[in-house]
Each structure stands twice: as C-alpha cells, then as structure tokens.
Image (cartoon, rainbow, N blue to C red):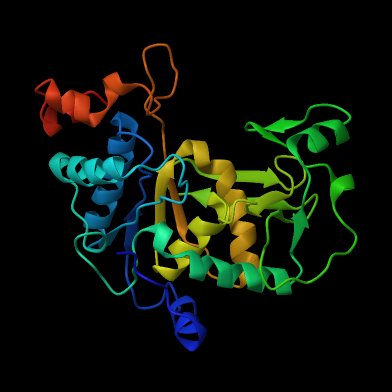
Length: 296
C-alpha cells in the first residue's frame, strides 16, 4: 500500500523543517528501478556510504520511481536485493523506515505539488505548451549544452493565468539570463555555468502529471535534510539548475560530490541496457563484492 503525504499544516511541517541544522551529515542513495544496477551505480553508492561513515553520519535510501512507464516492480525488488548483497547499508529508507519518509517518490506527489504551487505563486515558473517541434522551429541554429537544447527565449510567455493545479502542460523555470551559477564540488573542484548559455528555461513539471528530475530531487533532498549529494559527474549541469531552484525556494543548498563515471574499454559510459556489467550478472558469474570493487 502506498503511503500518503500529509496535507495542510502537516504538509507545511514536512517541507518547513530546517534541513541542515542539527542533523549532522546526511547522505543518500537514489537509485531508479528502470533496470538492473551496474558497476557505475555500485561505485557511486559505495563512495556515498564511505563518506557517510567517515563523517559519522546517516545514509538514506530513496527510490526515484516517478517514471511510471519504465519503473518496474521487479526492478524495485531486485535493486533492494542487489544493494544489500553488495554491502550497502542505509539507516533510513525502504524496509527500515524513518521520520523523513515516505522513501519512494511515487508516494510523495502531494509534496511536489505543494512546492509547484509555491513556485507558481512566486511567478518564477510558467506554463509551456510547446512541443519539441515548436522548440526546434524557433531555434535559428542548434544550440546544445550537455545534450540539452537551449529553450528559445522567444517562446517565453509575457503573461499567463494563475492556476491551482499544473494541468496537462509542461511548466518551465525561467532562468536569469547571463547569470553565472558557481559552486565548488567536493571532488572535482570549481564549476561555473552561465544561465541562458549552458542551459535555458528547464522543465520542472511535466505534462504527464509528474515533477521533473530537477524539482523532485531538490524537494526530496531538502525535505530529507540531505547535507551532501553524492552522484555521477554527468549531473554537474543539473546541479546548476537545482541551485536556482534552491534559491527560488529560499532553501539552503547542500554540498555536492560528483564521482567520475565508470566507462567501458572504449571510454563509453555504462548504461543499464549493458547487462553484462550489471551487479546481478556479475554476481551470477560468481564474483564477490570485493572482487567487483577491484574492477573499478
């Protein structure tokens, strides 16, 4: 049975907690059940656990299962089993519990909707009915940053009706064009991304009724009092976008530690569809967790 997020004053109590005071170090594991975990996931999660242990802190397991079409119950069951077999231990999360739950994103929609309302009321997000074709046609030339097409400024609306619910339309965050978003990564050093150049107005709510990765992760990391986010270096650009969301909501920004990606022999990053490098396959081949860690 799915847990239900509190509403009204109880909802305010959940999101209104001061995330980074008095909680000490809090890290997290955030797998998505769209396939079997591979070596790259294992390495990142292992680093997250080590950093939590060294800091004498807590590790939270949160399952990011908002992609309903791709997230499968069998993958959820398998990822819990694979994480446990590999030696990962979490102090809060599925099968453990904790005061910051629910720990599956599919059970946290009311929380995301409440934050969408805050952003909408602040007029920092806007409805964007444009299709991919509309965006492509509005571009004078392809402009890509880390695989993202820069959303054309000409498609920003001058005004729009205030709504109580998102409706069946995408909603975008209006970025401060030209602003330099700087942060210091605890592993890779200083980074700077220019809003409007490295990335444009990004989606925070999807037309299918779910928040985007950027919004859901910010909301969950804040509400779960995460003090440091450990994840792959492919999400560095997302960090810049998320800092803008933290700022718009008036929330403290956690620290970030981005791990180098595990790649194959030709330098290609691993993917879940590469079953030969999944923890499940390696386990079936007789490898132990210690032997797998040597493959890094």
